[in-house]
Length: 82
Length: 90
Image (cartoon, rainbow over the protein chains, first blue to last red):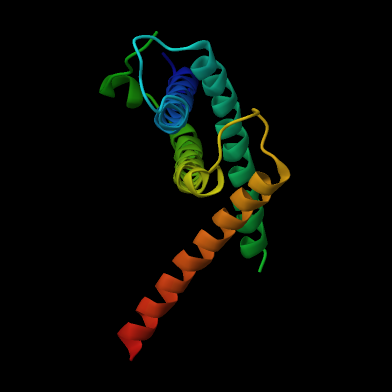
């Protein structure tokens, strides 16, 4: 391996790791919040209502994440520009 | 091709080392921002999404609440720093 391909490999590994950590964190939070919200009394199986709630909750959590991300990044840019 | 070893890393020339260093600085800054977004979302979702879930989209109230919640938390954390500085000087 030459210098260039070692560099590319390091970059690739770091990016993969970064994306995986991010996904893991998001999945953990979605499970935590949406289980709490959608399965208040766990029965012997997930009902179709609970499953529908979970799908919507997941979508909502991701929209909430995007909203916070936009807000925070806008603020960082504003404060950085001062 | 996985598992780079120390021997591979020694092959990096100075120019590539410098490039990697700035790439890593950049990535760790991005990671810090992401981690703040995760914890703000966690906190504000609990505060803002209080009713039963009826649709996947955020409604207008929830959207505004998430944005305000994030902004106000950041205000608060700025205030904490200011108070602590005042304590140190006073």
